[in-house]
Image 1 (tube, rainbow over the protein chains, first blue to last red):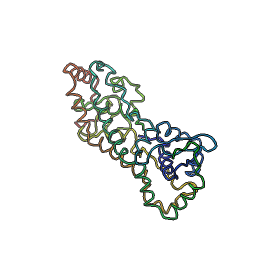
Image 2: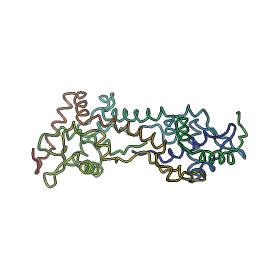
Image 3: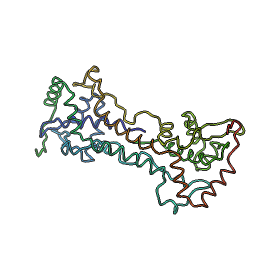
Image 4: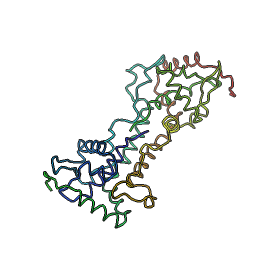
Length: 169
Length: 169
C-alpha cells in the first residue's frame, strides 16, 4: 500500500500556514524553501489543497496561501484525500465474473466479500485520520518544540509572510 | 492510497485453493484461467504467497499450489502483506529536519506527530484485515452461492486439480 509522497509535504505545509499572522500568506516557493523540497512539486500540492477548499490563495505581487478555514476544521483525512484522492485503495475488478465459473452480472448485486473486507479496512484507516485535526498536529508540534525553535519559526514567518491583497481578515 | 492489483488476484486464488480436495494442487496457469487473468501475473502473485509461507508448491509434471496451512490461520492481512509488502504506506522523509528552521537529528528521537498519526491509521487498516480469515471469506462465498454455482466450481476443481507428487496428506 502506498500513499503519495505529496501528502507528507502538504500536511507539513498546512501546519506551517496555521502559524501565520492574520491577513498574511506564504508563497508556494517559500513553503518549499522552508521544507527543503522542490518548489514545483510543493506548488502542485498547494494547488490540490486549494482545489479542495483547504487553503485559499491570492495572486499577484502580494500573493500567497493561507488556510481557508480554522485548523480544527481541517483533518488529516481532508488533506490526504485532497492530495491522494478519495478513491478506494483496493480496486475491485469483479474477477468473480471471469472465467469458466464466472458469475453473471445479475448475481453480483451484492459487493464481493473480498472487496467489502477491504472497504471496511479503508474505512478504519480514513476514520483514524478524520479525527485528527491540523490544530491537534500543530498543538503537538508546539508542545514538543523548544522555545528557541518556536522563536526561529515565528521570526522566519514574520520575514517571509506576505500581506494578502484580497485579505478579509 | 493504492493497493497493488495483485492483492485482489491473490485473495481470490487463495480462496479457490481452499476448495481443493486433500493432496491436490492447482497450477498457476489453471488459477489464471479460472480467474480470466494473465498467467504470468498470476504466477507472480502465487510465488509471493509461497515465499510468505501461505501456499506451498510442488514442482514437476504433477506440480501445483495448495494452501500451506488451514484457511482459518490465513488472514487477509497475511495475503496483502505477502503481495504488497509490510512497509508503511506513509513514508516519513523527516522533512522536519530540512530548511532554515530544520530540527537537529538529536531533537528528532520521538517520531514526528504526522508520521505517528499515519502509522496509527495504517495500524487500524491492518487490524481490520487481520481479523478476517480466508475461511471467513470462503464461508461467505459458499453461503452466497447458488447450489448450481458451487457444483460448477467443484466439477472444475475435480477436473483441473493435480495429484501432488510430494503431498503428505
